Each structure stands twice: as C-alpha cells, then as structure tokens.
Amino acid sequence: MKNSKLLLTTTAVAVLMMCYSPSQAKIWRVNKGSNYNGTTLFGNNFGGTAAYPVFKELDQVVGSSGWGSFTVGDTIHMEGSTAGIYDIATVVKRCVIIGPGYFLGDNSKTSNDLYEAKIVRINFNTGSAGSVVMGMNVVDNGNTAHGYIQIAADNIMVRRCRIERSVYFFITGGSGLQLATINQNFFPSGFTPNNALYITNTGFVPPVDLIFNNNICQKTLIWHRGNGTIANITQCKNNVFDGPGNSLNLEFTTADFSNNILIPTNSTVNITAAPGQISYNIGTQNTQFGTNNYNLVVPAITTLFTVGTSTDGHYQIQSGTQAYQNGSDGTDRGVFGGVPASRYTLSGLAPVPVVYEATSTGVVSTTTGLPITVKARTIK
Image 1 (tube, rainbow, N blue to C red):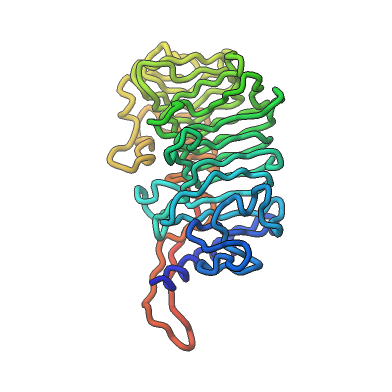
Image 2 (image 1 turned 45 degrees about the vertical axis):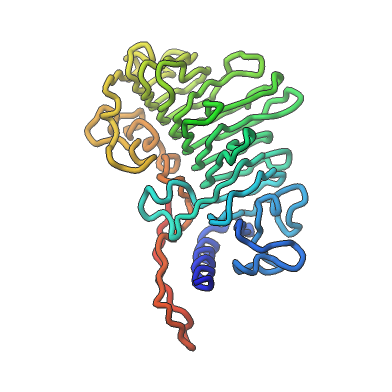
C-alpha cells in the first residue's frame, strides 16, 4: 500500500510538471511526511533525490537559509499530508506556492486523496516581491499568531486560499507597499480578529493599490490606516459578504465597489466613493447601497443562492434570481461572476491539472510495470 501511495503521488506530480512550467521555472515539492534532513535523506520516501528533494517544510525551500538550487521565480507544490500542519514559513524569495485547495470532500472531482495542505502562517517579507500563493488552507493551530498571511513586500497575490484569521499587512518605517491582490479566497467566521484585512503598527501606510475581488468573506471588511483613518481599497468587486449581523460590516474608501452581495441582517456600511462608483450591488436594506446605479434591495437575500450544496458552493447564484446574469458585465453578481479567470473557484483549486481519481489493478507486469488509470481536469 505504501508503494502504491508513493506511485500515485509521483504520477500526479508528473502530470503537474508536464503541464505547468511557467518560463521554464523549476518545480519543487513539499510534503509534511517527507524524511528530508538535508544531509543523508532527501525525501526518498516520497520519491525525492539529492538533486530534487521532497522538502518537509516550505521554509526549507524559500526561507533565509533555503535550498541553494532554488531559483527566484520557481514554483513550489505544497502537498496535502496526514503527517500534520506545516510550520510558519517566512518567504524571502519570489516564488509561486501552489496547494491542493480546501473543502476537498465537499465538492466533486477535487482530489484523489482529499488531503489539504494546512499551514499556520505564511510571511511574505523583503525579497519575496512578486510572489503568488494559492490553494492553501491557512489555519489556527492553537496560537494567536496563527491563521494569517502576512504581506510586507510589493506585488503579492493571494488567490484561492482559505484564511482563518486575516491577510495581515506589516511594514516598518511607515513606507507604503505597492500592489496587493486578494482574489478568490474564503474567509471563515469564528476567529479573532473578525476582519479580512488587519494591521497593528500605528505608522502603517496602506498599499498604493489594493484589489479585493471575488472573495467569500464571512468576516467584516473594515480598512483603516495605522492612525485610525479610513483607508482606500482600489477595487472591491464581485464579493459575497456574509459577516456578523447587526453591526458595521464594510468601511473604506474606493473608486470601484460593484457586483457585491451583502447578506447579514441589519448590517451597516460606511463606504466613501464618488457618485456612480457604488453600483450593481445587492443588500437587504435601502440604507446600505440604495437603488441608484443598478443597486438592488432584496430583503429575502438568501433566496438568491443555491441550496443543499457545499460550504462554498451554496454561494452560487440561482438561475432566474435578481443576481443572475445582471451584473455590470452581464455575468452573475457575487463571487461566481466577473472575468472568467477571476471568478471564485470551488475548493480553491489552482489553475493546474487536478488528479481526482487514480486506480490500478494492483498487478505488476514484467513488461509494462504497474498499470494505472488517471482521471484529471484543469481548472481555469
């Protein structure tokens, strides 16, 4: 069984390596169950070699003392594992980090083994500018410092991740960051702080451009500078906000707040924008977005969504409702509308081939080896 599992893992990785090789960058593997020690063992229990190890932790690849053969811009595949949760990683090199997603048992054709890559925290520090992370489940493992993705570098993109606490912005000296893109993520409720974006240092200057699109947010989105002044989100489109009822849910300035849906009962908003920049949104009360500029008031707002589906799937728009194919671009309002490449993806699956079934007869032939049937699909 152990050999069979190893073969299925390496088969899946082989498919990924053949189909996803941006600019000929190398692809590295990380698996919590690896026996990697950097001297005599290189993850050979998962097919690793001295030249191409299977690392045990993300830091061993892109940390300050990471793998010497790693080239800036390389890709790291974080594999799901039953061996535990990945430790805090502090990224100091530009890279692409790809995990297998989350809610893998909720949705169909997501994974062969349903193992998620859970990590307690990822810090993008100096040197990591231009990095991308997707498909990770960022969790609280019993420490208040857990559950964050920290951004302290320019041009960081956080996509298709489940983040239990917040995207935490941090930089010393009061200097502003450049572009930060927060797209297609799932922010669950039940964790403190109950806010999708978070800062602590009083001298913080928010990013010059901050994009927050196509996220499912069961938290508030209240965005302030370090001195308490309301801060700017450059673009906030096609989100579903399902935060706490009877409280302030949204507070920021923006030049584009459109195609969003605000679900909770009696929630209030404080969004500063020019006339026409708050458009095509849906709330439950007229005091939230009003009815000008194609904004709608739908008191029975839960009727917009499908029922009886997965944790994230039940935010899909039901055909024929007020949110169906009538957004600013003719697509659905909410997270499954907008530009196709930006739409929320169930389970946070990355745009790489996904092996969702691998079977074998279990009979080894001296001429053909072990026959395996692999079923895979590619998510856009």
